[in-house]
Image (tube, rainbow, N blue to C red):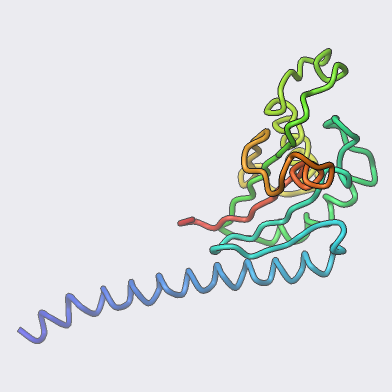
Length: 178
């Protein structure tokens, strides 16, 4: 009976131990990524936070995009490419690029280009950032992009400062199981 018990418990114990190691490895990998990214970005360029087992890099739109636009210049591309060495070294991690806007309606120039809503604009911005990362060397298979429009504001849209905070790109590193 004792021998049968050990045959059943030993594999379970090993499985639980390995599961804990994978989780600890993933956390350590994200911690290393956080340290690397913090060394590459100034506080006015990006905010880097570890939140519930996810690493989030938030960049405001003024660093990346012209007002009301989705195209980036060479300086913005350089800011984004600072992430690439860190992202290339990650294993078992997804890179989720999310674009956000404030509540200001899309301008006439964007409407002429077929971008009629803030959701459209935020999607184009997220796609642009994802494309820069992929062209920079991040594997396409781990990168996804999604526009969120006016959803999930982090500040009030009733002030210029609040609207500026809401116009942002978030690049979130998510491991398996999150």
